[in-house]
Structures are given as C-alpha cells and as structure tokens.
Length: 336
Image (tube, rainbow, N blue to C red):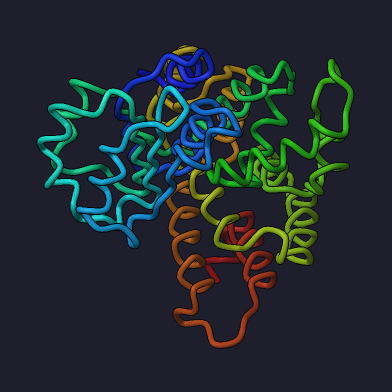
C-alpha cells in the first residue's frame, strides 16, 4: 500500500491489527504513526487504552503483556513502539504475528533501517510500509505533489529552488512550507518572491541561480552570486552547495551522452520531471564541452575535500567557494 492509501484508511478508521512502518525516511513513518495516534481512540479513551513505548525501554514480557490486554470502556487498544530499531525482541513474536490480538492495534515505528525477521509474516495479517528516501532529483516533484494535496500551487522553478536550498530533509521542507501556508491566502500561487519573504531564500542569490549563470557562462553574474553566497555561508553550508553543483554537472555530463535524444527522452535520462529544464542543460552543453565538465567535476571533488579540512589549514568556506567558481569559469587561469 502507498503512503496516501494507508493515510486514507486510517482517517476512515479502517483498522489492521499490526502496522509496520520501516525504512530510511523518518518523515512518512512519523506522519503515519501520528495519524494512528490521532484517529484510533477518542481523547478520553487514551488514558487506559493507549501505550506509547520506546524500543530501548521495553522488554519482551512487558510488550507481550501490553499486546494481550483487552480494552477498557473502548473498542480497541493501541500499542505503539517508537524508535523500534532499538528493540531486539521482534524475532521472538512469531506466535503473535500468526495470531494477533484483534482488539489491539500494534504499531511498529522502525526508523532509519529496514525491519528484519517477521516482515513476511506481518504482511499476511497487517499493513507494511517501507519508507524510502526521496532522492534529490525527485524532490521538486515531491514538493509539487505535497502542495497539491494541500490545495496549493507553486511555480515548478520555485519548487526546484526549494529543493536545492533545503536538501532532502522532508520534515524541514514541510516546516518551511507551513510558514508560507500560514501567511498567504488560499489561491495565491507560491513563487520565488514568496519564498524569499517567508523562508529567507534569496530569489537572486541562490544555488539554482548560480547554476543558471554557469549554464550561460555568465562570469559576472556567477561571481556576484558566489560572493553573496560566500558572505552568507552560514545560511547554506558549503558542503551542500558543492553537492548541488556536483549533481548539476553530473546531469550536464548525462546530457552530453544523450544529446541526440528528443527533449522528452533527455528529460527522462536526466531524471527530471519538467521538460523546460532541458533547454538549460542543452545550453550548459554549449558552455561546458565534455572535457570541461570532467574538469569541473574534478574541481568539485577537490574542493569538497578542502571544505572537510583535507590539505586546507586556514581557508574559510566562503573563500573556497569564490575560488572554486573562479576556477570553473576560467580554465586557463586554473591551468597556471
């Protein structure tokens, strides 16, 4: 079942005896667990019928005791194990997986890693959801879909800007989007100006605009953006900027290898949802021949190590960024 399907069933109070939420991305696990907490019991029923325990604090006999209790003045009980990856006794619940208590909703919130033994048995009687990371190239589309579920509209370019700036921490992205949601009227489209006002991402000086300036080989604009980012490096760490730029040049490399394809085919090869981005990568291919793409990626690897302190005793992150962008834009100067 998908995240949305499970959430819909929870809100419609269609219950399963066991819910296993596991995987790398904590956002979906937290949201589904919260939804069960909010919907399974009425507020006055929770004192006697809801047990929230943590993996490191529970032992097997006590967990079995919670699971086999019957509800007091309610239709059901709810037992939630949070931080479940810290509990090592799930392998000893084989008998429970085969015959769960029908009046108990058992929720296992197993964050940051996959569940081990027992997964197949749980699938036969309950609901299993693997919460996978949303990869960087899928983030703009995820932001669009998330806002659509909230009946909000956003410019695709702005979604890309948010993804570039905030990274793939979904909880952080949602928290920032909530700031906008609370401050603008329903029906107002979210654009770069909105993001600048309520989140603080400059619509002029950001990594997305830096990439755009590089794709046009606009040295003056690129260095101006680099100087501004360097002066505000505390807002967006250098390692994140470098990761974004490396991802960008990796896509330019892919574009070179697929340059004969149509825009739709190239968008698919690049793993991007919106074809209007394709023209930027075609422009970048003209600005950066394949040999220069290789050189730029090598520079980015070099400066990533410097940002982490290797062969760099004193140069600050802002100065490293300025130096890097200058070298990317000036291959002759770099050669000397």
